[in-house]
Length: 181
Image (cartoon, rainbow, N blue to C red; front, side):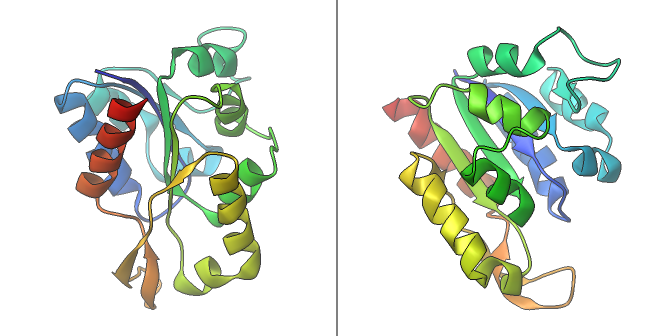
């Protein structure tokens, strides 16, 4: 099975990322979560460690780091990178090669010939913004696979396209990418 780095940004849909990590682990994959600082404020990274049995990472410069270059070690370890949920801010940083935190530096350290998937999750108005659409298109041009967001009600009260795809759909896309790589 595959070694998967699961990138996680701040979103109400974090609970789906935990479920995804659990499902992937149950299917035999090794999953290491890398959370943005804001995601780690919303959910304890230890939850990802508990469901995956693998370390979770949040900051390349704090006392929890495992080596002097966690991002390089993770990039070498990863056979596949999936970012779910991916916020508008994170999508913009990824699309523009901005290495501003552990997750974005890890994404840059994963070789471009390995599968990289992105699953957006945000308010429908935010998702529809030309800048967000431009950044998603750039990621696809750069070889990322887009996991389309779903439609429905959002925590903010709005309804429409922008919900994180269901964990089963993300897992299906990961399995497909792993088989074809």
